[in-house]
Length: 202
Image (cartoon, rainbow, N blue to C red; front, side, top):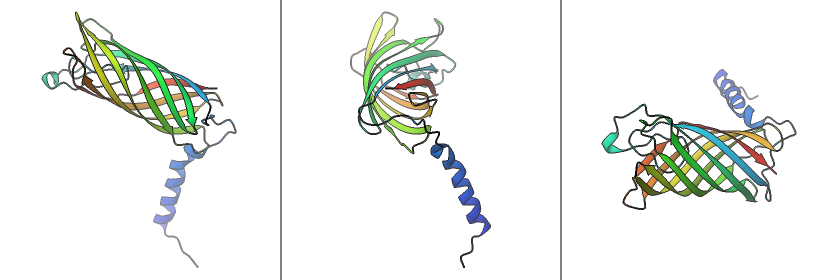
């Protein structure tokens, strides 16, 4: 006879509870198969340490060694992306993004970017689908009379919460590393504060 101790049973219950959201099925799971087209948009807030956060409109805490002590400068950002599943669970996106300050005194700059990224969905056949992503974009940062040009490398971790077969809420956080491409550009590191969006699949 095999006996299970209390600790073993407790561990099994905890693992089942953690896995439950990713295994919950309603029969209306998102179609993440090859050939599916996706359209998405998201909104976020930005709060930098420093004068520049990089070109991405994603939520970010910018790192700038000369201004690392400056907090409390708020802005907002967003993006619109169009994607295609070339194989199951792998989505290639092409999109535009931007960010802007809430006030004239904010250190968050106005910015605009275009880019491409890849998302991999960890599909358990559930309405809750975790994913990881990575991408690159090039963007323009507008600081007074100066326009900076940056190349950004991004990474993201998030989850989709399916509302039906075609629409899902999109929640996540991301990192953004900016590399200057002209004299006005600034090296920066953005640590995501979180984003909220919607994705549609056809």
